[in-house]
Amino acid sequence: MKKYLLALVLAFSPLCGLLPGPLLGLALAADTAPAPQSKPQDPTLEQARAAIQKKDWPAAQSILRDAVARDSSNADYHNLYAYSIRKGANPDMSLVFKEYNQALSIDPKHKGAHEYLGEAYLMVGNVGKAKEHLQQLDQICFFPCREFSELKTAISEFETKQVAR
Figure 1: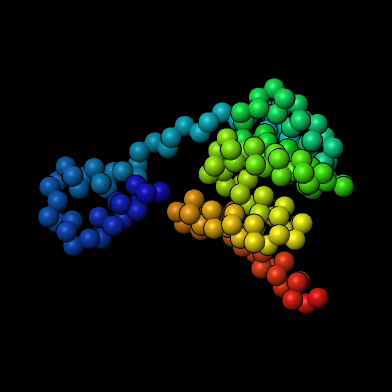
Figure 2: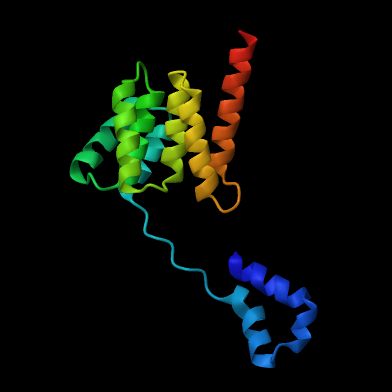
């Protein structure tokens, strides 16, 4: 994306005519470079996401509980495990907070964990802590990202409901 923007800026810049041919060619060809290889899919995450998609919270919890036991250094496992607990019936919020915080201790810039932890704080009525995670997302995301937008919306809806009471 950044290469595309650079090529676009250079293509329309009045200074383009001043660039030596090889540099202009490199700038304009930057967008044609092959895309970086995406990392291989994690079968455990695929299974968990499939269960989450079906809203089969017990299955997602089981898959992710086992995944966390096998690999406690995977922030995605902790994040989705906490999510599946939070979305399930009668969530153990102390476990939810523990797992989200574990994900963030592994990867402090994990956008999903910040979003979901903010939403968990809203579940217990702590809008101040939710806003802290919104602020973290604002710093992490170069441009507004989906996680920032969704948490911002959740906070706004929470505050609207509080005023209506």
